[in-house]
Length: 307
Image 1: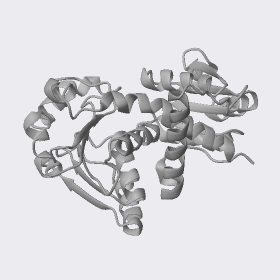
Image 2: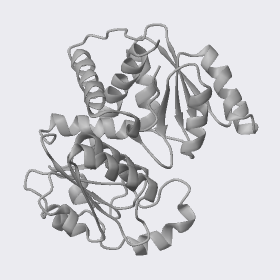
Image 3: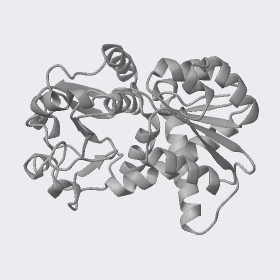
Image 4: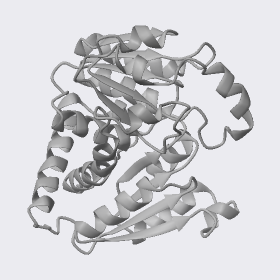
């Protein structure tokens, strides 16, 4: 049995196999065929952090695969009243076939997985957001940007940046990360990424100059500057991130056919301009839709690995 907690746990071949599976399932759906790969199975969806895309994509995804999604807010279950994570894991995994968790600490997710009898999927933690990267790379494939790409990340050194580091390091492409001083990536994640990059041949650049990162890039991507739980830091962050808005002038530094990605929600005028977000190079809604299809690939692949 396998869990899907971080791309660090997966080989290049496995990552590409899952994405290819998601693309094939997507093609079936677009042709009007809904194959019940997970017929009569139940996906428990535990949310300690709220979400639009994560809830809709997993709930619709398991339904299209022939199963049922069970939404569990931390306010509605005993976990929110102090029940140990390991106890919740042992109960829910005896009743459901798969579990998706969207929470704060990566350690909490990993503890649940250790005590679970069924596959566990990371729907987001403060450290990683691997399902989003599966959708992002699927979108790059569809737009012809997966052949030895140069990807520029502009913004905070957050869970999305960490996941981009893992994807680049595993697949072997070039990633340039531009963050303001004081907002760099987690050092342990960087160490892991460099170790994997040495094996794959990936090129990883860290800079405080977003223009250096974006120049001649095939893909430009960013995220909100103020994530959930950081609202008290908003005013400071807005000052510290001055000059990091992906606007028309910044996109002009990338290749003429570069695409723009954003995991959403987006705050126009902050991390991205209205011009870029709504422009011809933006593929953010293809990317958002691909959360549905990439995650179906993850669920079906995990189900096929059960002992």
